[in-house]
Image 1 (cartoon, rainbow, N blue to C red):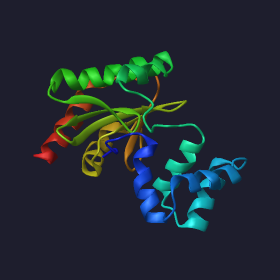
Image 2 (image 1 turned 45 degrees about the vertical axis):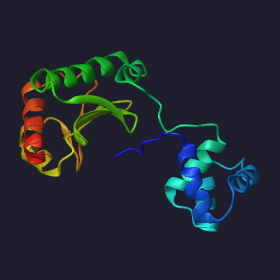
Image 3 (image 1 turned 135 degrees about the horizontal axis):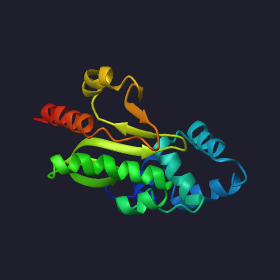
Length: 184
């Protein structure tokens, strides 16, 4: 579940408590390594100060000017950043599911559109340069439907489809039905 307060500053009180220094100290540390690349900055905080990945990321990204983990407030904001083919395909995927399951809520989580019911995620999609990934949020659902997706790129947790995929509404609805059955 994403952190409720998406601001990087939400981590600061715990960082100060856990690592024993005020944030001004950590910003001074970051100023000393400002010329380093992101991975080196993260490694520095982790190796030299015992930071967790999440805390190191919060300090590094804040120091680089990113004040929030949230890039998109709505699915529409997300779609605007996509190639038009991808946006059309992803919209069609969610429409196919929500037509049959209107009680599902379309939200942004992890900076991607996701469908959920209550606090449980049911389906998600994200766009890469050359394909779209779908997530069923269930290993069992993925394994059950893998034989019906031989022409798609089925991985451990996701299914890759072409950017201009002709949406298989029945397949998507059946996968969501199986996921919802798991949640009952």
